Image (tube, rainbow, N blue to C red; front, side, top):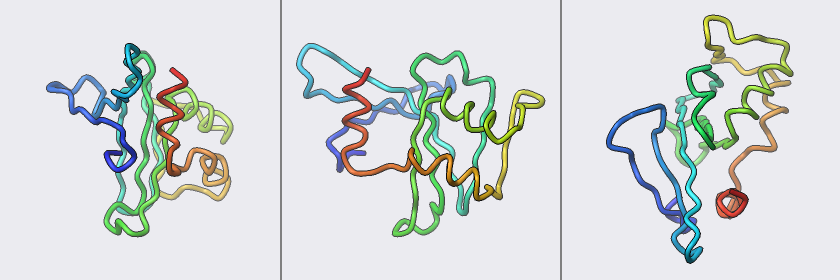
Amino acid sequence: LVAEGIEVAMPLRDKFIDLVIYDRSTGGNFPAIPIQIKVASDESFSIDEKYKNVPKLHMAYVWHASDPLNAEVYIMTYAQAKTIVDELGYSISNTRWVTSRPSRHLKKLIKKYKFETDQLAAILQAI
């Protein structure tokens, strides 16, 4: 994030937000995005209803975190993550849904959210 020119702040308290990213270069506007990070040494995808009421919350899924050269990052809104689970035909039972073995279909659905260079600047400008 820092390499992309995005500012990163860590909240003093954890109210479902792990990081706040923002862009200081926008002049008077102060676009900021709260991020909930889900990190896995392999591949994992989860969603929890406790996050649904956090305004502008984005989910960041980091796969293969133990191998930084091959790590993959997917960033999406909570609503987009919920739509993926709905599209897979699952419901959030007991307020949570998780898999540590994402199917091919799930991988296809999240592919468009894979982090690419300069993507975060566009996300910040959209809010």
